[in-house]
Image (tube, rainbow, N blue to C red; front, side, top):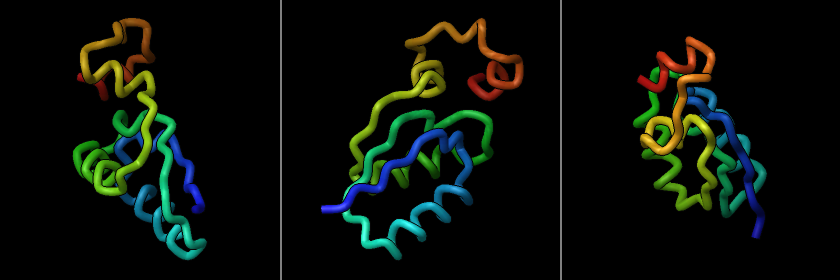
Length: 85
């Protein structure tokens, strides 16, 4: 069993795909996501769907908590606040 560990995708579908191509070449079989799947990038839904499809073990990041309504994001940087909204 080989783990691919990633974090801070922030809705960047293209970067996630590139990381997964690298992991595939390395024979990775299982995944761990250390949070912040959403935020900033243009494709949060696609990134969420992909991480779910990987059956990855996930830890929520602060952006993930914010979009789920479980974290007050009023102290986030203005660009991060806009991404959450």
